[in-house]
Structure formats: structure tokens, C-alpha cells
Length: 392
Image (tube, rainbow, N blue to C red; front, side, top):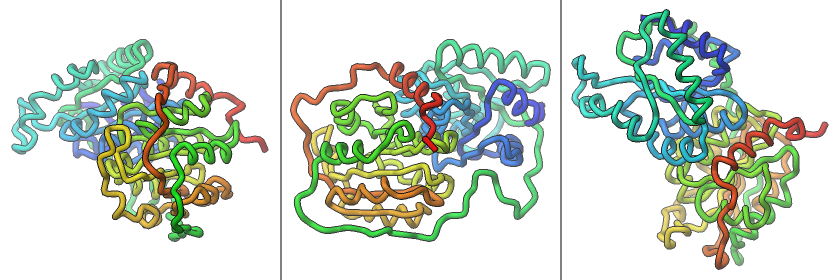
């Protein structure tokens, strides 16, 4: 059995300074240690997939991240593990607990996952080993993980068995966790819900491009037509085009915004994607600062898969966002709904806009020519460059 301090400090020496995930009793010592250290970032996620995407955003922003999850939640992370971190070659370190360990008696719901955890990781081409239980083996294990991540640019996993880490006491009751801001009072800004002809997605993207300014603003698009249309209008190093990992654009943007506060991160979401992972609205509302702008382009359809209807028609997304702690939200069916959040001065928290758009896209819409790995590398370089900082 080792102390959580030994692992976290050895990881810190290798540059791991961000932690995110969903709690498991096996992980309690790590979580308690990390939230007690003001130099480390801990982001509690609504689900394991959002944790993976947030860690990917942190990594794109130049920080190394650890994702902590129970193996029961590994299924929630399969999509971003296979279509985000694998596809874009984004290395994050996983600590996956082994509930349902065949060598121990556990609850019946963990039995199957306990048997297949290692096999599941191997199937996703994620190398793994058991978390070290002795201090002498910790350093070599971390170096092996580090070597793989640096060479392959993909995740590595430690499977954590019960009683591998000694307890670490929780912080004193009543103290405030790091990176937790006080939610702003709900503010709907000046909602515009008028009728009239709805704009197209391309018109909305043109307006967004016109309102964004280099070098401060970076754009992250949801998967589907949104990224392809943005690419066709303007391909820039400040753009990250999501492919796959549907619904994860907002959590990736949150991770990036937390580690690069000098940037303004503009997430361009879709209704189907946002409905898939609405839990991240609550995490964003609680943890994001004023450098995150979340824009929803809502055509009430899964447009790129044949136009199947979503249920967005019955959802007041602006009300949901403010209820979740966003500093302000706007809604409308004309392009003016995008003006306020992109022209507003930074507030105490993230901003949200819900724009109704019409369906459809232009014929022969191109796909980005740059492959995902090169897109991620270019985006990371842009975020790290001195000219990505705002001009004073």
C-alpha cells in the first residue's frame, strides 16, 4: 500500500497538475489530497465521458491531466476514448478502479465489468498495468506510462485494486474547494425570442467569425456539419473541429478554458449534442470563468444523419443554463442573439446563447483536409504561443 502523496507528487514532477473524474471509494485518498492542494486543479465531472473530454481540453491547453474513474463508468468513457483521445492523439493518464475484482467479493452489479476491465482497455488499444502497491515500484511504473504517452500520444491506464492506497483525510469541513467560484445570480441578459425567417448555420457561423478576434478567441465546434461549415468558411489554427465524441465539445472547452484563462474559448454546440450531455452545463456553470462562451445553434434536428428530429423544441436551454449557474444567457431566432455574449465584457462566469436556425447545408460541403492529429497539434501550438494572449 502506498500513500496518495507519493503518487501525486511523483506525477507532479512529470507535469501532471490537473485531475478530473467521477468519485469511487477507492479513489477517495487521491481526491482528498488533490483538492487540498491549491496548486493542483480538480474538476468534478458529471460523468466519465465528460471527464475524458475535459482532460483532453486541458491537455490541448498545455497541461497534463489525470482522469479518475470507477470501472463501472468506463462504459461512459468509451466514446471519447475511441473517437477523441485516440483519434486526435491526446495523451491522458487514467486511474481506473477495479470494482468486481475476481479475487474479491463485491456487489453483483460489478461482477461482469470486474472480469472484462483489462480486456476492454486492451480492445481500445490502451495499455495498462495494475497500480503499484509499493513505493519502490511507483517510479518505474510512472516512467513506463510517461514513455508510452510521450511516444504514442495516446492514453495509458492504471487499474487500481482495493487497498492499494492508504487513506488520506478530507479537508476541514466548511472550507472552499479550489477553483470553485460562487455562481452568479441568474441573468437572462436581454432575450430576443422574436419570429421571422430563421438564419442558416452558415450565416450564424459568419456572424460568429465576424465577432471573434485574434489572438484571444479560439473556437471549438460540435461534431457534424458545424465543424465542416466553419472549415469551409475559414480554416485557422485557432479552430478545433470535433469529429466523433458527440456531445463532448462543451466539456473539452471547459477544460481548455480552465487552464488557459487568457484565452476566450467559444464553444459552438448543436441541439442533439447538447441534449446528449446536458450534465456538463451544471459543471460549467459552477466552475467556468468569464472566458467561456457557449453558443447553441439549434435546428431541432440531427441534420448530418438524415434530419431526424430532436426534442429541443420543448427545451428552454437559456433557462437551463442560467439555472445551472451561467452568468447570463440569451435566446432568439435572429443573429442578434449572438451579439451580446460575444460583445460582452468578461463577467463572473460563462455566457450562453441559444439561436434557432433553419435546417440544411450547402451541397458538396468539404471536410477538413488536415487530419485530426495535425489539427490537435496545430491548435495546441496556437494556444501555447505568446500571440494567443490578449493584447493589453
